[in-house]
Image (tube, rainbow, N blue to C red):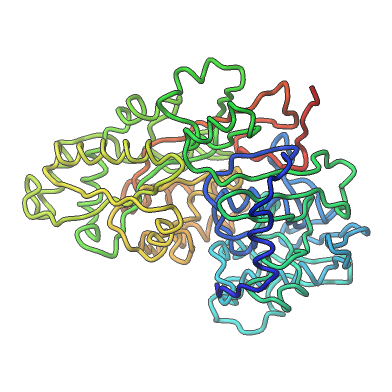
Amino acid sequence: MAQTWTAALISLFVAGCNVSYPRADFVIINGHEPESLDPAIGSTVEDSRVGGALFEGFVRNDPVTGSAIPSLAERWDLSPDGRIYTFHLRSNLVWSTGETINADDFVYSWRRVLDPKTGAKYASQLFYVKNAQDFCEGKLKDPEKVGIHALDANTVQVELNAPTAFFLDLITLPTFAIVPRFAIEKYGDEWVRHQPVPTSGAYTLETWRLNDRIRVRKNPRYWDAANTKLETADFLPVAMPSTALNLYDTGEADIIWDKDLIPGELLDALRNRPDYHSFTQLASYFLRYNVTQLPFADVRVRKALALAIDKKRIVEKIVRGGEKPASHIVPDGTAHYEPVEGLGYNPEEARKLLAEAGYPGGKGFPNFNYLLDSGGGANQHAQIAVEIQNMWERELGIHVELRQMEKKIYVDAQDRLDYNVSRSSWIGDYNDPDTFLGLFRSFDGNNRTGWKNARYDKLMEDADNQPDVIRRAGLLKEAETLLVRDEVPIVPIFFYVGLTIYDPAKVKGIHQNILDIHPLNAIWKVSR
């Protein structure tokens, strides 16, 4: 994005540099500084947590289950063939700045995500919509042929390529939130940096002070403002677990939401506290290979390195939060699916495959690097990396250099395939195998491996078009078999267990669910 530092931008970003802020009603440790608050651009948990408070779409997440419930659309109809949704908007919708929200805003927002000029990493999430992929890839020039249309000022029709069982859960994501066309056309890429920022969600952006906090304030024009209890909330960009815990224990913060921000070395002591909460989470920790480079273009090499990793030792020695070793990418318990088993721990087979690839005992194996991020969870990521480094050296006779980067640079390096092996993780966006398996389609912006497999793409496409749950699961299993057993562009390591720290006597409205989604407008604090 261009950096046009106007007076308004400076005011938004550094407001209060020499002012002591009064404490917000609710203070959240939010990890790294967000990349962007534009819901079409943001791609991290930190982005979506703030963006979800500011912008909404047709539906939002139920605070108890995480499933889709009405938001800006009060209801919807579904055609008998399961392909056409007709959304009926609420009659009292306005932007936080007072302008009317109408059906055209939804059409504009979704088309904007699909426009390559926007640079939306999650554009592929809209590819279930008729002609959306062809439009995004430039094969179709007429946006009117994309399957989203305003029937009138308060009605939007969305036509899908095929019945999509998880579509309503999918469109709870920030990618599908509506954005203000009038502000974007006035300010371009810098629209979220000019006050007042028109928002459609429960909160408005009061200030974004870099390396200090993002403060949001209750939006009095939000359609459900009467049930939004917190007046203000702060998101603190704290990436070090020790700092996060110190801020929480001294009362400067109300919640630590991410396991990566809880000191791993203190887990044994913390798990006995009443403010420690553990729950099953739809999330996986894995390694990516850059398959466009030698020697990782050779599947035998990829399999060899995978088979030499003792995942049980990593979980028991380092992670120690109740996580389970993983040989597949889709977590156990995902709806309507029984995952396949991938590669386990077999050093003897690993050495055999490495020798077949031309590197007996590791001889002649080229230098390579293992990319990992610094900041939140960095100590644990580094410990895992060192453990894997030792395993590969001991079992295969090869050596890997560890390459640690600040998170934004690390994500950019993954996007550019500027790595050999990279530590990765994914938290499910909705309770369906597609949220994990869909990442590795050839065209998906989150693939980040360089791996392209026509058979895999076809299996995923057929699964998208298959209304029968059992047959669909079979297609997805074939796809996952290619991913974790046959082609191996990734190496699953373990399945996360969610950990959160907050005092349930003071903080209400948080309900543990498999998606670890907790809408801010449903939270409140008890006065004591």
